[in-house]
Structure formats: C-alpha cells, structure tokens
Length: 381
Image (tube, rainbow, N blue to C red; front, side, top):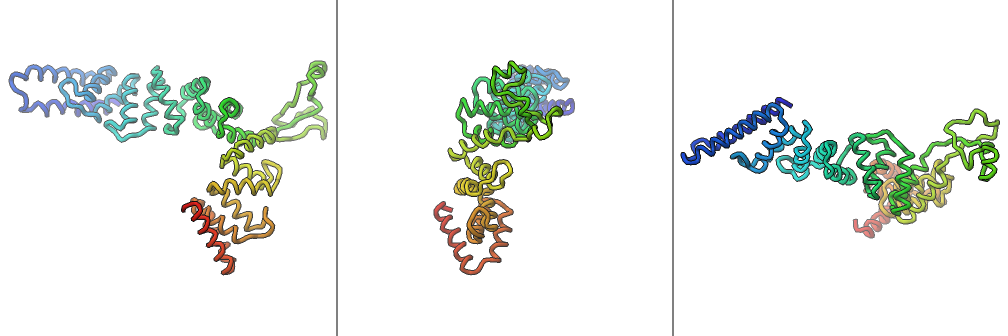
C-alpha cells in the first residue's frame, strides 16, 4: 500500500512541474507557486497514509484542482488507496469510476466490490447499489454476512429479485453456508405472494431433491384433540435417521418433498417454463425422483424440445434410439433430435448422431436430413 502511494505521489508531483516549466508569466508566478505548494503538501500527507489527504488529492485530479489538469487514472489510484483504508466517500468514488469506466476499463464486478466496501463503511446508497448489481448477476460473490443481511433487508421489503438472489445463495451455498430451509421459505414466498414462475420451478426442484427421511406412524396423531390427550405430535413427524424406538416394520422411509415438488414443477411447466418441463419430463422418464410414466415424461420432454432445450433434445434422441417411450426404435427421430441438440451446442449429441447415422439405410438418412431441414426452415435457422 505504501509503495503504491509513493509511486502515485511521484506521478502526481511530476504533473505541475512539467506543466509549469517556462509556461507561467511573472504575474502568475505567485499563484502557481502557491498551488504547487498546496499540492506538494497534500501529496506528502497522502503518501504518508492520510486518508482525507488521499481523498482530497483524488478529487483534485478528478476535477482539476490545485493547479492540476484532470487525470482520471491518477484520481482512481488515490480513491482506491483512501477507500481501502476506510474512507467511505473515496470507496464510493472508486465504485463510480469502475462502473462508468472513468480512468479504468469498465468493470461492474469491481464496481460492486467497491460499492460493497462503501456499504460496510456505512453508506446506505452503496448498499442499495450493491444489491442491484448482485441481483443483476454483475457481482460474482456474496461477500460476507453483510451482503446476506442487505439482501435479506431488501427481500423483507418485498423486492422479488432480492428474494430470488438470496434464496439461490442459500440453496447452493455460494459464498455462504447452505440453508435449504431458508431457501425454500424464500422461494415459497416469491411463488405464493408474487406468483413468480421461476420461483415455482426452483421450489419444485428444491423439494424434489430433498433427501429421504423416516416416519414412524405409530408416534403420530392426526386428530388434534387426541394428539393433546395422548401427548403425541400432531401430523407427520420426519426423522433424518430411523427412530431407535420404532417397532420393526412400522417405520417407513419416504421422500417428503416428492408430491409438493411435482405440483410446483407442474405449475411452472404448464406456464411454459422450459427448465421445469425438462426436469419434470426427465424425472418421469427415469422413474427416480418421481414415479415412472414414459408417456407423460416424453410429452414434457417434447414440450421443452420445441423451445430448443438441448438436453431435452438429447434425451429424446436417446429414447428414440433405444425404443423407450416410443413404439419401436426410431433411428430417423433419433438422428433429428441429435442433430438439433448438436446445433444447440450439446457436444455429446454429435457423436451420438454420427454413430446412429452409420446404421441407417439411404432412405432413412434422406428422410432424416429432410426433416432436419424442414424444422430449420420452420424455426428460421
């Protein structure tokens, strides 16, 4: 930090000296000398780590004060030094410079980091601007508990994007410990109160991914009065491990989110959410996350494929090649699906397409290429 300050000071000192050599008249000598003295004094303080002097020097370079010509790059050097030291206003100016590209290449992630720094130093506007950049996807890291707190405040105030951004962080554990329960609550709020389609999909996905848990029906009571009388919990009680006191054959292992997760996915898929369509179709076809239903699964995959979903196209190609979900093996359909998936950037589809093409007869090959071209013409590709 001190080395950078010294280098910046030398750069700063060189400007007034170069500009004043042989240029000032005798009448202007005293004011020029006074401005140079003020600049030298400010630079000396700044080079010794005085944050306010660093900030004032940065302003002088930004605006052209103390006899200096504007120099955005040198101004940014001093703003960042003062901001790093804890000067809130300097951190704000550094954020503005990176956001507008003044004196440096425009970098919204770097701008977000400086807005974050200013926010931690107490600047309320900086906190708001950081939240905006974060939910826009311009900031790559949540920071620390401060960032989570600012997002939570915005979410509590009804900001849908803040709800979704915070829920995503807590679901995935990106920069913060994962908290699926809190993520679920945020998604649920966004889905119910805001009717957000993406929230419906994410809530369904999260619920469907919940691990299996144990229930002991003998310990549950579904009549509220009887529950109070018997001192038993009312409704379902979930255990992460098998209850030690459960009678043999009485405790059951179930996946608590399977039914509700499917309902939320269906509600999003029915509204055209392509990822919900793909996930629902894939789950139905595989029969792992949801009960197997090949007919419905293929239908949802086809709905996603119509929207150009590469993974759905690849899945349909695999099913057609194997004859699963269709009446018989269908190499023509498989080739078409693989070709379209490859066009969407699905690398594995290229090898699958080439492999199935080798086993096709000339008539099948011609028909497959004709269908691909017709589909491309329809989509304008």
